[in-house]
Amino acid sequence: MNEACGAKLTPMQPDGRPARISCSRCSLGELCLPRRLAAEEISRLETLVDRSRPLHAGEHIYIAGAPFSTIAVVRVGCIKSYLVNEAGEEQVLDFHLPGEIIGLDAIHGGAYLSSAVSLDTSAICQLNFAQLSNLAGSMSGLLEELFDVMSHRIANLEQTFCNSSAEQRFALFLESLSRRYSRRGYSAREFTLAMPRRDIANYLNLASETVSRVISRMNDQGLIEVKRRQVRILDADALHDISRHCDASMI
Amino acid sequence: MNEACGAKLTPMQPDGRPARISCSRCSLGELCLPRRLAAEEISRLETLVDRSRPLHAGEHIYIAGAPFSTIAVVRVGCIKSYLVNEAGEEQVLDFHLPGEIIGLDAIHGGAYLSSAVSLDTSAICQLNFAQLSNLAGSMSGLLEELFDVMSHRIANLEQTFCNSSAEQRFALFLESLSRRYSRRGYSAREFTLAMPRRDIANYLNLASETVSRVISRMNDQGLIEVKRRQVRILDADALHDISRHCDASMI
DNA sequence: CGGCAAATTGACTCCACTCAAAGGAGGTGG
DNA sequence: CCACCTCCTTTGAGTGGAGTCAATTTGCCG
Image (cartoon, rainbow over all chains, first blue to last red; front, side, top):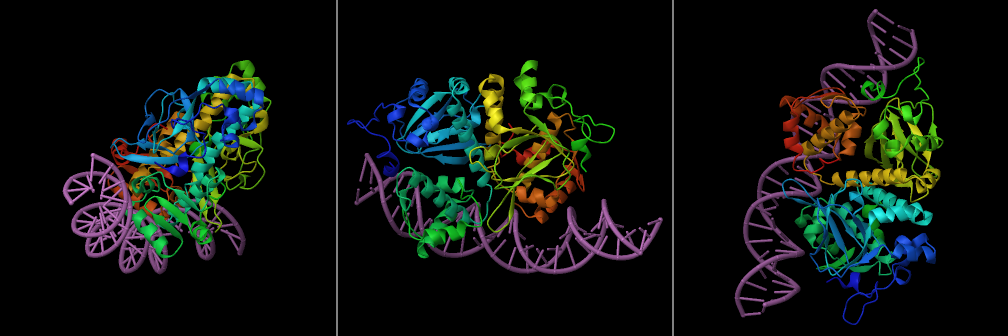
């Protein structure tokens, strides 16, 4: 289990299950849908939220092809979304941290296009999209936030187009994680990777051996310190020098 | 000028300028925002539409960094969207055909993230997004369509993740164009590329020489017939065999 | 301790890039 | 109308980075 992802963001009950707290008291706060909403609006939104039980590592939220009805906000943990091609090969699309929304690619087709699986013990809030859309019609703050979130996802995906060397891609990957963790109140310098090398490699369109080699090289150069899944960034500037030729910095 | 893109889709006036026709009489019809709207709703939407003069090849619609206010629907022609990194290098994000919307990545940031330039003589309809969003709040069909369009763009971008061999990527590129042209009433087997090899290569993360070589090989194998920018697909099945290991087929 | 999966490291191969040069197409001006 | 110029495209030769295959090491868990 990935401690960095789990422990702090959501209050836990003594038995380890996340407390059934309301959106207004959720620690995600500004990182989630209610961002622009007034208290009264939040309670209306709240009626749509389905806080299911925690997900175990390896447990799926949805599978490609299943009929679409809900999007989901990651509350705790880390979710991997991926496509499977005709040959059965997996293509990792992204890793989603708390506050990020999954399922947006399925709105238009009536069925999920990708699959989503929990990488560690996670928790999510599911929202029926038809109801959400309906509510957004009468709640401009929610409407704006939804457009914002979707636009953000589009921008994010576009930025990942700048493919170049293995070093650049991996540096970019680390910086993205660092930025997102720090925004969620964790250290930007030290965090735990929730995903195995194979998934990182797949996501970056590299072989996992190549990822290993890149990590080793960066280790030797004193840029990072990686032990298994524990990452410490030693020289963020040098790391940024490597990724700098790619402008994915505004995500 | 790209004839395939320009001539048929929009009625022209004798002087060559596109006629100032209304959305309800626009030949894009089902391919554009009014898709789910009633006649009365279309006329309300229409008040937001800014049909500017035709764009010449090389003319920009917006530049990255400029303050965001409008999205745009391509009406005629072909628009290229691209990022520029810190080193000044261009990264082509996509080529947009009539009915497709550009600027969606800028909604969340207040400024355009990418730039958009016309590849041939094009025409667009611009819409102030704040007004559009406002209207969507009271017009569920428009709201659904906007969510749909953005979701579609997300799905589209995700699908392009499956990077593999140069042959696969180019086959996928051709199939995507073929599909989109045929949906717009053109031949799926024969069309004109609006963009130079350099842009295709950049978009596919290849060198333009590699694109040339791939084209030559596919030519020799009798899969396609390419003369300059004129493409004819001779063996769509074989082409699909090449791209098949990638599931971008549902775009 | 043993068995298993993940991760690392090495050796070799190959695909796509770079550099370089030669054809074409289209536009401009004489 | 043609010559010239420029840009796009094609083709060739050589190089390098990432993939593949294979062996080893490491950590985990029963």
